[in-house]
Length: 114
Image (cartoon, rainbow, N blue to C red; front, side, top):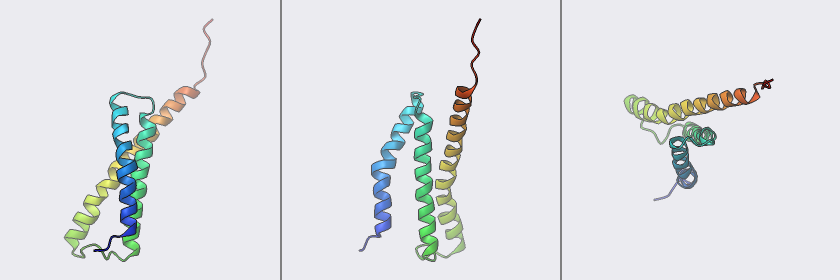
C-alpha cells in the first residue's frame, strides 16, 4: 500500500499541533484564561485551513476518492465532512466577536474621577 504524502503531512500536523492545541484551548476555556479566545481562533483557523485543503485537493483530483453515488457523496462526503467546516467556522466567528468586544472595551476612553 502506498500512502498519500498530503494526507500524511496533514494528519501529522493534526496529531502534533492541532490535537494538543485543542486540549490547551479546552483547558483555557474551562479556567477562563485570558488567552482562551486567541487559542480558539488559532485552532479554528487551522482546522478550516485543513478542511479547505482537503476539499480543494479532492476537487482538483476530480473527486476520484469519493463514491459517486449521490447519497454517499452528499450525505457522507459533503454532509458529515461539512461539520468539520461549520463547527470551526462558528467557533472562529465567536472568537472574533469576543476579541473585538474586548478590544472595544480596552479602547473605550477612561474618565478620571474628580
